[in-house]
Length: 274
Ligand code: PEP
Image 1: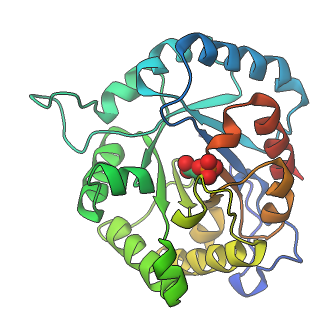
Image 2: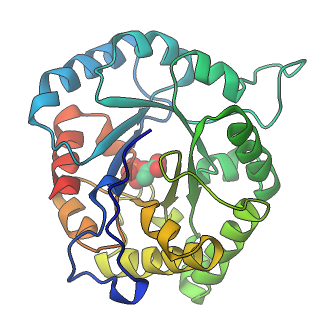
């Protein structure tokens, strides 16, 4: 459990011009997707270990390698790196070929699972209903969650992106009365920005993050909403991280391509700690 040294800031005060209200919200999470060999993965962990003392202490660092490596990387990762799974089963123990449960992940030294990444939603039929099942499994088991939400380009162009994100949040959080901010993270990832090199502008990201925090405030109360981390994902890299993270409601990033190279990833972590 992290200590949440909370300094409450009302939502009406949230703006790019204010300092971050709660530095423990800062997280930079990497998503390697289906990249790297096991040796390259171990080398990445060694490099992160070498950099550990140079990284800001007010940023939680998380990485999601391919699932087959998780157990082995749990043994050699530096202590400041939190291990996450890119996916988790919507079902439990039993005859579910190819699946791995939240309990299995925990037993392998994994602390978080990503749920609802747009690539899972698009290629593997992770509908809102499947997302709800996966969240339930993780909550039951005590595995941390990084819940991803985001809109495709046509929805952004139609101007209905807030409605879509509200729908994803309503579905995901519908049956949940409260969340532990140390174990529940939200990532806003506009699909048109993922892996495209086209980043949301700082204003676009900030507007959506403030909208999401306001939604969370309505659902869980303003104190809880101020404790929850909301990450931005979508072509975030060293060159644009500081600008994106400058908004008071952007608590860090979910990083795909730029998490593969430790020097790029560390620059993004530095930006999140500013
Ligand atoms: C992602 O996969 O969640 C992502 C944000 O990827 P990228 O940073 O490469 O756009």
